[in-house]
Image (cartoon, rainbow, N blue to C red; front, side, top):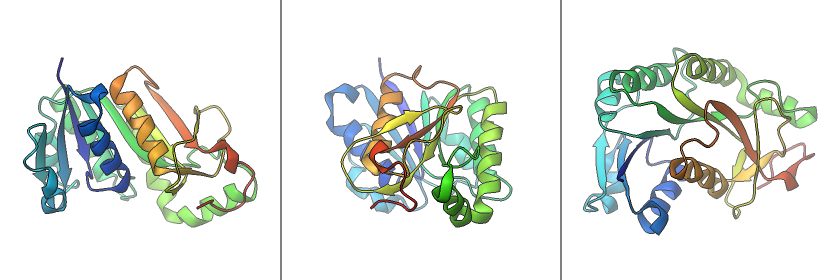
Length: 217
């Protein structure tokens, strides 16, 4: 059965890994992509692919986001909502509810629940700064929305190979850094099996980086 996946902020580095793997791996041969981004020309190499629909739009435009939700099965939001009004999160929730779409994978940051300890946890909060409050609000809005959501609490990212541990909301974060390929792998795991990590907030990191007080690149 064909599965329709919408990716918002589709030109991001993790989003592009997800797109490349969906379009090249047999596991995802039944997946069609709708790619929503501010400048569609950035993905013009995909415009002639029969499984790809490009939509040029702004994620703060509620009408545009809602229109993109039509006939989708899974939504991947490939950007963190640091907007003080949480317009992105509110637009996604409203659009999904309007079009009866339930499954969403939403990017966020580590440290939402003070689950990152020690010197690195202190440094992480300092670096995210004022962006933490809207990030936490975004996560709470999702939890309260009634949608079938997964929050991805991303580590500090690098371009290493796939290697990660997943921790749930009630577990200490395991590691400080992880690769973009690892995050993309988790997204693809959920797209392939939408019941995975349902209504949960998960941390993703390379456990070999646990105990470091700064990101590992």
